[in-house]
Length: 111
Image (cartoon, rainbow, N blue to C red):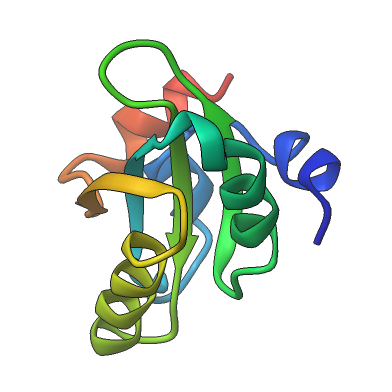
């Protein structure tokens, strides 16, 4: 998967994007701080990670946010750990995405 393809993926619609699934696969946002000297290498390595669905540059304390998905919780944990160990990643902070209590309200954000 190339970085260009990742960057043109769907936006952050969260629950609205999951509304049609019977049971959504576990997902997470992983915010990454990169070592400047290894930034390009880290981005190339991230593009090859299975389970990566989006990669975005962000401003603030972190450089990138990766959106990842796995078949089950244990696989998601392993995927997050794999990303945190990549050369050039100096810090990683993961937040699991969980469905909202109100799918109908979330769906209204997508329109």
